[in-house]
Length: 147
Image 1 (tube, rainbow, N blue to C red):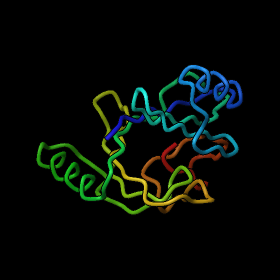
Image 2: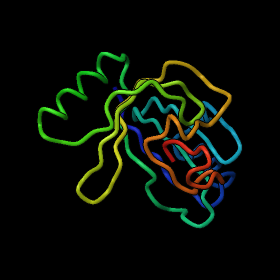
Image 3: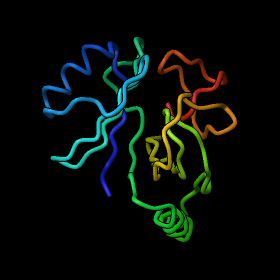
């Protein structure tokens, strides 16, 4: 497992340049308004969403697992502890097929517990989206997913 940090950035090119230098790692995936780093040391999934009006903020946090069973186990544990979740869903989000569940913290911070199952050409759709915003240039309700 590794932690995920998803940030809104005001300029995707500047942010990619900075984080490439900071972690000595090129992006694993790059799409318009989006970059995804799989950093080995420290173990971190860093995701950047271009959002000119909201740069410098946390978009969401997450835990990337190795299996769908780990996602289901986390979902069961979260529900047993009394936390409201979205349930386990197969989705396309952030240019990837995923099995995921979401929970919102006490200050409205969003946490995604997920495993990536495939790469996708599309960012995601409203039907698969537990959360929406105007990041990545996709207005809320127009097909944004985890952004």
